[in-house]
Image (cartoon, rainbow, N blue to C red):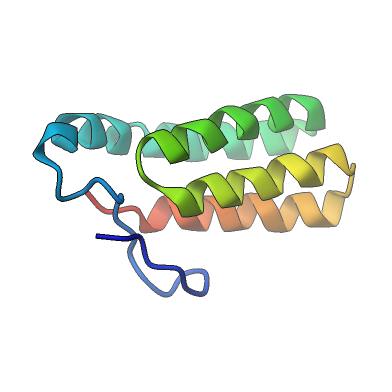
Length: 107
């Protein structure tokens, strides 16, 4: 199943690999880390270190693709670019969008 592409907050998202039994354990393990990822992102943002946020977003961008969440990769790429541009308003929006995406992941 291809991941839905829709407005933020409107639908649950599933991995492009959700129907592949070989990925079931990996996807569940990834899903278990989502609360920690949300917390870490919010903590990094509160700390205000854009370079550290950028590095974190870059790693999550790769993980999103690896786990079949292309929208996660897109959201993380936007955060990475917002940090590179040193645009605080864009960073706030990108953090919110990324957390929203993480909240909508379903396994």
